[in-house]
Amino acid sequence: MSQLLERKRRKFAEEPNFTEKKEYRPEGVKETGLAFIGHEISDDGNVMNQFLHYDQFYTIRHGWNSKFFKGLLEGKLLGTRCPKCGDTWVPVRTHCWNLDCKLQKTDWVEMPLRAKVHTWTIAGWSGRSSLKRLPIVLVYAVIEGSKVAIANELRSIDPWDVEFGMPLKVVFKPEEERIGAVTDFHFEPTDGWEPSPWNEEKERIKVLVEPVYEWIKTLK
Amino acid sequence: MSRKACIIGGATTPFDYGPTGFESIEGGAAECIRETQFDVPDFSLRDIDLMIYSHFSVHFGHQLAPEWIIHDHLGLVGVPHYRVENGGNTGGSALYAAALAVMSGHHDVVGVIGWETMDSVSQSQGSEFIAMASDIRYELMVGGIYPIYYAAMANKWMKDNKVTEEDVASIGAKNRNNAMENPKAQWYRNEHRYISVDDVMNSRLISYPIKKYDCCLMTRGVAALIVCSEDYAKKVNPDNYVTIDGIGLSSCTIRAGDRLNFPGWTERYGPSYPEMTEFGACRNSAEQAYKMSGIEDPLKDIDFGEIHDAFSTSEAQIYKALGLANEHTIAQFLRDERTHMHGDIPMNPGGGLMGYGHPVGATGIMSAIECYYQLAGMIPKKHVSKKTEVPDAHCGIVNSHAGTGTSISNFVFRRH
Image (spheres, rainbow over the protein chains, first blue to last red):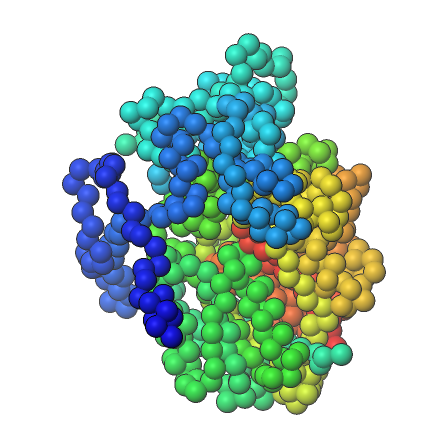
């Protein structure tokens, strides 16, 4: 009985201490929470709209996935591997997806910085936070050895030149610019890769993409 | 064998975006029920013994548990209620839950109300909210919006199946032109014009090969549907009810890249499926619904469908996942316009997500309502003409679709 009480009083886990801490919060941004900041009333007096500002900071607790994101800060691409069936993944899985492995915990492995395009697209429109980066060549690429494809940007290429199956290298941002997110790296064509000759599809893509370059120039 | 679930009626508010004609969510829900009461005078809110609410994102609604506002506004205190959320398949999942509740025998009359107010933020902010249903740790930051993920999947699918941009553009034009017959459709109420394949081809790039008119609309709207036992249907609407003969719900990975070699799919369908191109959850849930409703050849046995055309490309991919065509026949299937109103299996006569609109939580309910109207012979009453009526329709399919194909439901409805 006393042993049981003792166990109940024990802490579930020791709290980690966070000595290394960095903030990238833009200057002047305040966590205001909920605030009614204005309204409008239609001329006929029948309709009112209220403007609500809602601003919150979140903590994404990476928990057992932390090694992957910490790896990015160090310019490494970490994957996980199931010690039972050998399947390997980037993006990582901390437990195996194979039901026969009964949610086996996986091991961390450093992946090669080589990949291949599985499929691709050229974005001419995006979410608010990505508009200024347009047009974006987005590829799903398989990191060498991985069972899955990971999405990321392909740079140092004209959008119309991207190809299925093309070889890629993983390129990290300079260390001081990294934030521990997937945008710390992007793909580039492998050194020495040459695009295929001009064709009808490339012409079509060029027609679609050129107005995007013009439009981006008009954004504040 | 469990008992049958039926549909006796339903209605949507006009679908819109921006400042025109908004009732409030609870006001809109009340108007949907009022229209249903008008269509089915013997139906009473007193008969409802369960309410299931269908709403995707509290980011859009700036209100947690907004269903509580609607529920007591309708005067339904004491009636059990809960909310279903399952991305773009929220409406389909709520319908699935309602059908199960009736089939189990535990509930007799179940109201399903879905809504979304996507115009509470800017379009690009709205796109980003929706993209928060992608894995924000890996995908949101590099892509930012769903059309990009769909475009990457469609680009390879189109090459693998020899489908061209024009082939899918014809779907974008079809659904908007169908919506020109539907006074509640957002396209009818706002842009209000007929468009051609060229208009789709010349619209601005969203993400290659998807252009603006290959994409669905962002919408504000509410939809309500009444699911019930056959005994109740016979009592209140004996001439105009439909039976839900088949239901299916299935799932796939959140990140599209994770489905390349997924053991769960390999077990079911062999290696290299669904790749990053096919909708495995659509095929799987359609198979469940077909089996339950005794459908052997969907192309022959189904007369029409209201399906989840978030993009013209995904409507084409869905045709294949529903078994209407295979990799050898899909391109010709599209070129023959089999799913246009003059084809043998019209798809989205109500306008679909590209014409009627896509207020996420209401969308699957809207599709079910349009399917119900067709089967109950109500199209001449609900649309502006008979042009979008499927003649002599006996069997329809309803499809609701979430994520990058992450959750998909299919339903087979029949005229009783």
